[in-house]
Each structure stands twice: as C-alpha cells, then as structure tokens.
Length: 387
Image 1: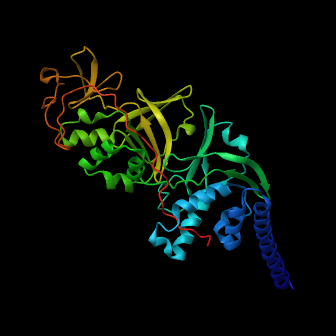
Image 2: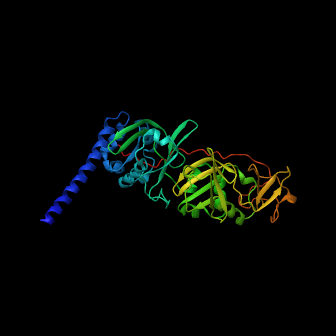
Image 3: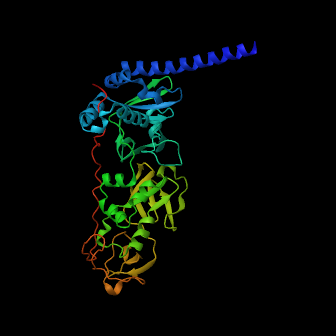
C-alpha cells in the first residue's frame, strides 16, 4: 500500500512539473506571438522552442528580446557568410548560446537595470565564451552613463531597451534593438577594440596564448601610444605587461565597494583600485572605459600605463618620472623626454636606440596619441534559422 502511494505521489509530482514547464513555454510563446515588434522572434520560437529553454525554465528570468528590426538586420548581415554553420547542429548550438546569453537570471524591470550599475548573471555556460571560474555562467552588465542607458554583453557592445517590462509567468521581456556580441578572449577583444600596439608588446614576449588561456582575469590596457618609448629588453617588457594583469579575480567597477582595494598583479607587485565619486582609478591612472566583458573576466582601458616604479629620474623639462628600466612616464602618464645622461639608474641603453621588437626608431618625443578603440562591426558568424 505504501509503495503504491509513493508511486502515485511521484507520478503526480512528475506530471505537475511537466505541466508547469508546459505552462511557462505556452505563456512565453503566446506573449511574443501577440506582442507587436516580435513577429520574427515568434516564428523562430515556433520553428524550435528548445532554443529558448532558459526562458521556459520555471525560475525568474528577464529575456532581452531582439525586435523585428534587430532580427532583420542580424539575418541580413549573417545570411550565407559562414560555411561552417551550414551544419544544422552547429547552427543550433550557436543560436542556443546566443539566446542563453540574452536570458538574464532574475526578474528586472527597466528601472531596476539602471537604478545602479549592475553585473548580471546570464544563462550562458559555454566555456568558449566563459572562462571565469568565479561564476558558473557569463555576465552582462548594465549602466547609465551620460544620460544613456545600455546593457552590455561582450566586445563593449551595448543594447538599448526599446519597449519595456512585458510580463511573462516567470519574469519580464525587454525588447531591445540588437543582439549581444559574445565575450571573446583577451587578445581577440583587444584586437577588436583597436589596441594593436599593446598586443604587439604581448606577442614580443610570447604571452598571448598564456593570457588567453588563463581563467578568471582582470586586465588593464593603456590607451596612450607608448610604443615610441618602449622597455629596452624582454624581461622589462614582460614585467610591465604582467603588472597590468590580475589573475584569480575578475574585478568590475560595479562591485568595488571599498574606496580603495589593494590587489596583487601577476608580476607579484601590488596595485590599488580606487573609486572616487564616479571615477575609477588604478594607482594614479584613470580608467577611461571600464567593465569590458571578456571570456575570462574583465578588461579596463587606462589613460596611461601603470608603472612598477622601480626607479625615478628627472627629464629635460624638469618633470619627475617613474621608470621601469628605460620606460619612463611622468605624473601625467606621458613618456618622459630623456637623453643618454638622464637615463635612470640601472638602465643600460639610451633613448633613441632602435626598438628591438618592432624596428621603430625612437626619439623620445612626447606623444598623446590615443588608440582608435573603434568597436568592430558584428562578426558575421551566424547562419539564418528562418528559411
């Protein structure tokens, strides 16, 4: 009798669970079908509802639904441009990852995204796009800056909400004007953002693959063009690069609750992360673009290089300079003007020697050139599922 009762109870629980999941799927499908501006998404749902499994799970979610205009543009760009996606199974995995990334864990009304900056866990788990061991899934991040409100995915690409707070059984749909771009490795992200000079430095000491494969990192890249006054040997260059990397923790500015946080870099020296009002500093360098999501964590762009401050000297303008070997910056973060007699103690070669890594003649000239940092157009890697 007891066994029969337990079997009946178990069967009822299974049926109830299936009924609940079916109800969530039915609710999501019916809502997008009758919502103006989501007809293309509705057709995709009818073609294969399993692409939206994360939305249909009976837990709280917020789904960023691309508008018809966004879907049309996306399919126009990607149609027929990637041979490897001619395989339907591959197409399925790609779209599944994409829609998992557009599904945020938790219920958020539009105002709740932007009442304060937020790091938002999503349903994206694929290790190709998520190599951060601190968290089980990849992030998105929401900001309100200079009057603009955006939710960012990878590659510093943000989406605008065009129609807000459409309720479903387990959360909200927010209609957005595009698709997230997927989080990529450090080197691919830096390349897309236009930081070729810094990647040349990384390649010169053979660190690209090591950095790309290291999980859970925070990386800083200086925006000023430091190439004209480079470190004079590979050990100094490696030390400089490693001073810009934190391993074992992805620091987003939104999560820094202390005024100053002291952390250790890969080269073993400490740096200080400081929040001053709305500004974010690393030592005395200002972060000019923060919280770029990579597959392994966070990338931040600085207005000047960080410097381990091994030595100090004074340049021809009387400026006090902090130096790593012969790589010297002044208090404004700009390369110092040095002649051979002014090189810091411990440096073995004079400014003006040929750059051994890039074949560029250096003359010590001050430069304030800023890398373009242009965000590349959406990489055409997705094939159309709508025939």
